[in-house]
Amino acid sequence: MAECNTEARLLGNASGLKETFQVLSQKIDKLYSESQGDIFLQKAKEKCGQGLQGIDAGSEDYNVLLQNYTQAVLDYTFYKESKLVDEDFPAATAEARLQDILGELDGALQTVDLHNRNAEEIAAILGEELTECIYWRKGALLYMYCFTINEEKDRREKNGDTFLKNVKKGVGYLQSMLRVRAPVENGANVVFNDNDTMELLSKGIFSDTHLLALMYAGEMCHWYAEFSQNHTSNESDQFRAREIGQNALQLYINAVKGPLKGKGWNCDRAEELIKDLQL
Image (cartoon, rainbow, N blue to C red; front, side, top):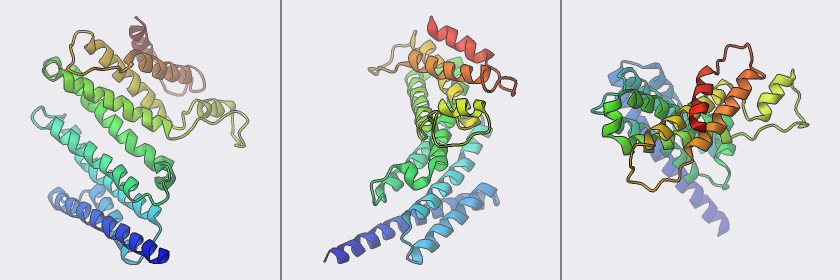
């Protein structure tokens, strides 16, 4: 009886995941015809195809299937995101389109969670880099959007609560990205070519993207702290923008002035922002 129940559960999971792939595939096909063969949509189609073939072949390697699905969502939403950025976040449609993209990316994580048969961490299923990519894409998109709004003062004033909410969400996504991998401890059983690399990894900085995430988070916290001083929000907010921003910017500055000194990074803007946040 237990074996029958297990088999039924697996078939149910496979059926549900297949339907999820099919829904995404239909969305991709529609955009693909409109885009006249966009390369990212082509990649998304291929990942969907691989996933559906795996399910039809009876694959029980759900990690691979979920990786295919997540990568397809990332490629599909990248096309939509690129169009939104190229159009410079038009006032009439940007917020709705932004939330649609974020919803698609959130949906990928929800799909992973739904088909998580062994209650594993998401990074254990998708891998660290793919998991980081989801959070980075959400955080970086909100950074670009909020940057545009912050530059257009009238637009920011008109939608103040939404601006603050999006900034806060963006910082949260970037923090999630930075937490996917734990910092490497000194003395860990890992071989490095130099002390500079060890110092960066010990601070949780594994790539240029991690460094950018620190700068973006710090700058967004500065926007939040600056605007919220003169804006009465409808929400009860305990967001520690100044503390979070200072911590992120200080880590960025230490890396740029330390192990990355002379390697093309600049911390002038970060130092200006951290001074403001300390006032």
